[in-house]
Image 1 (cartoon, one colour):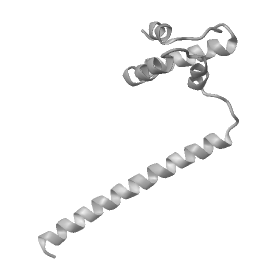
Image 2 (tube, one colour; image 1 turned 135 degrees about the vertical axis):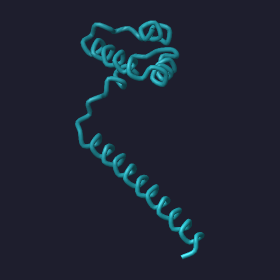
Image 3 (cartoon, helix red, strand yellow; image 1 turned 45 degrees about the horizontal axis):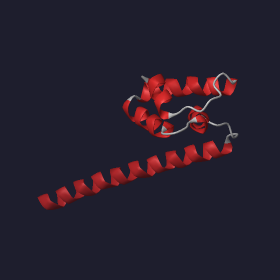
Length: 102
């Protein structure tokens, strides 16, 4: 084998590994989708909160999730609990949500 053939084989092997990785990721995503579809329709804490958001609330939530993902997730869970228990009944606009997150 020439050196070019060896390089070509290395590139082919690398590409094959990448393709297998992509296929595995797609299968995992499909499994998650199937699992979500088979589970009962229990809304996630995020979905519960989104239904209660008002003007620019979703925008603030999305920005907070990108900047402070762990902290925002905790706030979302707690707010969803409060909404479900009936302690929070008012619409949460972007300003109120920003205050809660900060």
